[in-house]
Image (cartoon, rainbow, N blue to C red):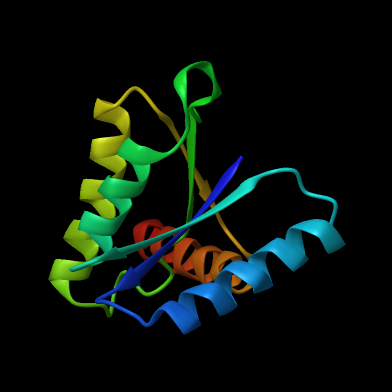
Length: 123
């Protein structure tokens, strides 16, 4: 497993080392076997693309992209939503499987939105 972290813009080496240490200790504490990869990018899309292209070696290359559910898709900027979908399209172009992780808060919002849509269509 490669746990990727995309930082927008550049950051100091001290901050990068701090994030590396924090991730490594979290992996050890939870007994997760994997690598932490930190990438700087102009934006989320460029950083994610660089991470997908650089992660892994040969047969050890990851074949699944796990993304978080974009809970603010109705209120975020159009550019951010485009980047989110472009990342998924790039992963599919690279023959990666795409999975979207829905955490509890987003799941509640999603269920509420789905109930609103069903309720509107019923009348």
